Image (cartoon, rainbow, N blue to C red; front, top):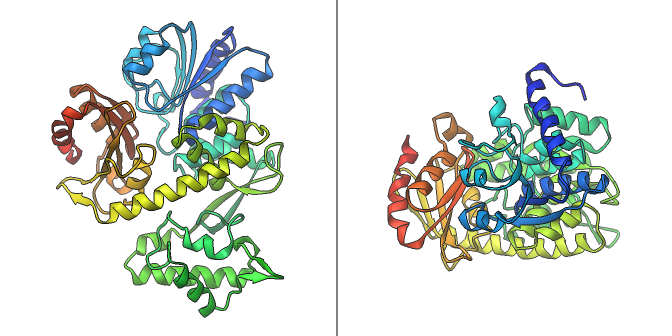
Amino acid sequence: MDVPSEFSSFFQRALEIKKIALSMKNPLVVHHHDTDGITSGAIVKTALRKRGIPHRMKVVKTLDERAVEELRKEKEIILVDLGAGNKMVNELGDVVIIDHHQTEGIEKPQLNPLLFGIDGGRELSSSGAAYAVFKERIDLAIIGAIGDMQFPFKGLNRLLLERAEEEGKIRVEKDLVLYGRYSRPLVQFIVFSDAPYIPSLSFNEDNVVLLLKEIGIETEKDGRARTYSELNSAEKRKLVSALVEVLMAKGKERLASKLVGETYLLMPSEVIKYPMDASEFSTMLNACGRHGKADVGVGFCLGEKGAKERAEELLLHHKRMIREGIKYARTSLNDFGPFYFLDGREKIDEGIIGIVCGMLGGLGKPVFGIADSEDGRIKISGRGTVGLIEKGLNLGGVLRGCSEKYRGIGGGHQIAAGATFPKENLNEFLLCLEKVRQ
């Protein structure tokens, strides 16, 4: 791959990290539980397995004090999509870090785009960094970036996308951006749209059926339900126009303008037999990780037998929980002045509180949501928008600062971040979030 001069130092550092990682005898690969973490872990596993290097895998939700304590006994550790934001990693043994989160005070060898002037929140994910190190599974680098909402692709992500196209791994199209273009029956394709949520249509099958009838689109052909991908060009234009009209009528002009965009289609491979929307692959991985089965996600990435079927089951469960979470959030969101606040304790699982907050975005202010953490603490997730970032928002910095002040651990990106902290510090923590104004 020809590397533009502005990325040369980043790739030189990637080569150094590769040498360190591949010199390890039996490393523990520790990765995050979301899509980017799972794809990053799968890329590292692919590289180590190909070279016959013994290794073990471990997934963590948060690299907090407890997680670090469990790692003290390890001699060799590869951290992916983790490690950049916790100085305690300096106390561990031989560690190499591949991450894209905001970082400060880390002394261990690290590949992080932020250290090279590359935006880790919008221009390169951890899976992209892992690909830069090992040159394995560029398709997973694309899927990981999509999982971190880093699209449309730009910067180093765009370079990797062009490489994936050249290798025949990905096909880029301009199309409707709703989930399930190739996999869902047409009615369910619209009914279960939650990104974006379409008022009067999302989760309302009667209205969807009526809309399709009004614009003259048949939902079945030869006794079989049609998918969006099977519509002809004229039918697609009719449907897109109708959806835009619905959003405009509900005052959702911003969503209407983003209804059509760049989409990414994975080509058949040793993992998938038929073309698959990369966003669908990404969502399945996220479902695995958010519900305690990141190993299933890694298995799906690697084409292990039965993993895809198990991932599909987890996806159904994941979508159901999100629908219930959104339903609760619509009546429970509170305006706390500089931000909106959602108390999801006993109502929304910690694995999806961030997703729910993200779906409530576009309100002109950041959204913070809390949920019960499985370790007895509180999990908080924050979501912003590009417009807020341009005005100076840095959620990762805010949550990291509040966490350090109130015995927690947190950080992330400018646009999306999370933390965990003791329950007794909730009020003080929320007051600390007043800094979100700055």
